[in-house]
Length: 352
Image (cartoon, rainbow, N blue to C red; front, side, top):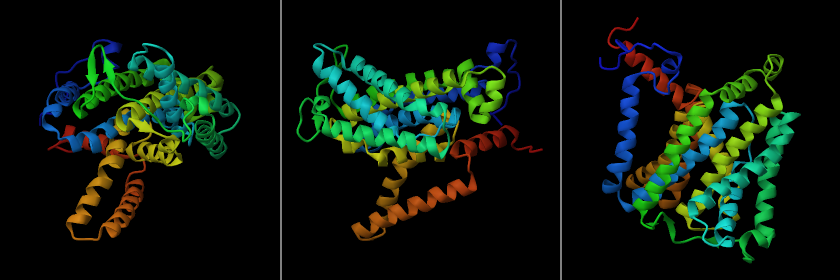
């Protein structure tokens, strides 16, 4: 009964196009963000930070970046793990080679490096699409894996390709405890999610969606395919590169190219598909599904007395079956289920 729009009048176009047109949505989201910043750091355990919250935040950021490309612009990409690697190794080189480089600036510059590589491998999208574009972006994944493993300059002449980062700090704040790392990542995610939401509501976001729905018709009405597709690759790669730098700097601390293998690319693609294509909120739902569900299934299987190896195999089987089930029941992802629930709630208890 509380979720109603009665009395909420819009008297201007900006008011009608705001991020949260319903006041209740705005209050709930602001309350969740405030609780994430103020309450969670004091209540969550170290295991919760390391195993769930930090990976969830970083992968949500990467999923938002991929969703901009796949969900909003309709360009399939299987090289997301490679772009994450570019962001991580680019940020590492800026941090190590430039004296006094702040870690936050290095992370953002890592995103810029990923942008350059993403645009370079996005050029084929001007002539090909669909499965052929997926194969072209897959080449980016294999190229990045080879480059960071074989070219020693990227890893400061490390023989194994493994690098490490320590002593993160921000304006005198030492980011060393799990709670500090969580807040560090949360700040990035909130800012970048707000940027992404405003981008997809702007004229460039409408151009992306026009290219996704029918690129020939979009060209006819004056939308430039070169500009629309390459900006989608650029923005997506920047988000993914920043997420890759956070994954290396904050979550792993020490990593090698295998940390950004093709498995990571498929994992992020599953997040976008399950969460909901063309939905910022769906990126968070997909990341939560991929991160939390395997851990929960593993705990349940062990609690039921299964052998550890059997529990691991059962987790993968159940996880795969649930993915197929969700895709059959709601191909538009969890975000669509969330939208349907909100629509029903606005009419309850008087459906018509």
